[in-house]
Image 1 (cartoon, rainbow, N blue to C red):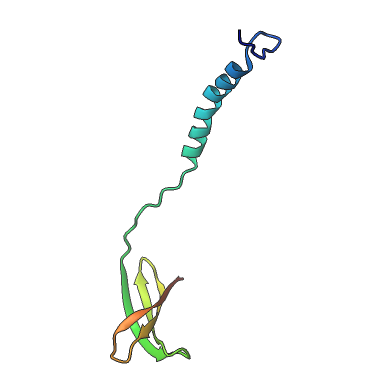
Image 2 (cartoon, helix red, strand yellow):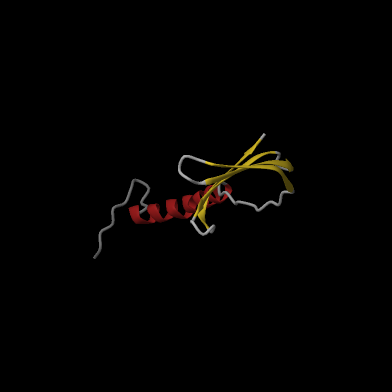
Length: 97
């Protein structure tokens, strides 16, 4: 004989937990789905002009260009170069104004 913990209405505690789970789990899934963020890809038309170059204190070649079109502003490239002229990495920043 098994004994179950029953409340005043005669419903077992395990059945009550299953009922709560069956009610609240789908609600939690709906809430989570409604707050999910999906990144959409976007194409932009940009033209570059007025390139200026310099060498910074770290020895990197810095290129600054004006951007026009969908994203007007300034593009800055800081390129790590090797003695033979190859680019081995760097950083970039686009400031849209």
